[in-house]
Image (cartoon, rainbow, N blue to C red; front, top):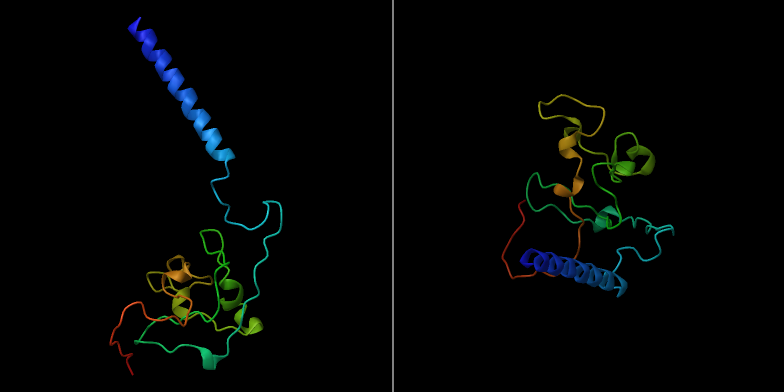
Length: 145
């Protein structure tokens, strides 16, 4: 009899839990990341080009260059890297974009590759979009010469 009570209690609990999950999904508590429906085309804003006079200088030697445009909608993952559409050596001349450094085409042992090395695939590990934002804390940092 005791075993029967435990089984019926567990069954009741699982039914209540699944009913609660269905109710939570139907209330619309989760907000989608895209603006439109899933079958609509997700348009990406045009890249806003910036003249070289508006670019920020580097703050120390060997600092990776800052990205002078928004990359908010760029896909950079294991399958795709939209930065290479303009900055890969095969496209940069046609697009008027700076080409990647040749170090991006070397593997860990220094061998030249025809494609970007896997260790340099995720651009935003080093390169970040520039933004003219106020400092979050006061500091006396001076860039190097």
